[in-house]
Length: 251
Image 1 (cartoon, rainbow, N blue to C red):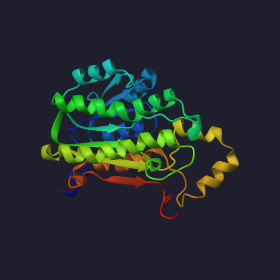
Image 2 (cartoon, rainbow, N blue to C red):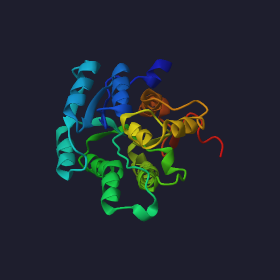
Image 3 (cartoon, rainbow, N blue to C red):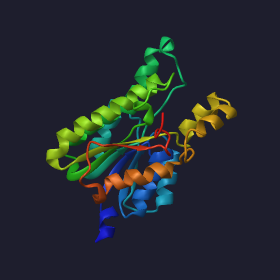
């Protein structure tokens, strides 16, 4: 049946960055489509709120800092076999020209945005905690595809996610595991609010005009993520799905 293509019934997924924004909305949508989630984030209060709103005894949370190697090992040792992973955890830094880069900025952004998920997936695969015919979705960014002045630290980490998506899609295809990424434009989340605060309201208003459909909301990205988790996308792997309200359709 057509409806079976989109259902997530009896499937379980890990979602990083689950306490807010795209990760939060992805968890809620997984729940609504019959699946269950293991929400991973640092903020316990927000994770508990997620559990309450989803109201499904099959859902669970893990309070963990993905920058901590031991925390990642604990996650892998704790979880059952899963049907997929969504990596939505991410941080950014203020727009910074090349000459002002600092090693700690590079290390911090890379660790959360890129290193953490690569290490987590490595352990999940090694310990056979992901089923055959599963789906992995990375939340990258159009910043990793197009050059924006001052965004090099963040863009570099998202570009790395895009590259590893294609590599892992090739490596894991023999197990029927699909690996794709979404590349959103500006989405109204708590993290992007920090970026907005750096700039004037007038500057942001002008920037939004570059988006034919305006800035996005977390649910606008959660929907395509869930599509990539479902059987409706079972012949798609190694792809980068740009979700940007038309921002990059013209130069």
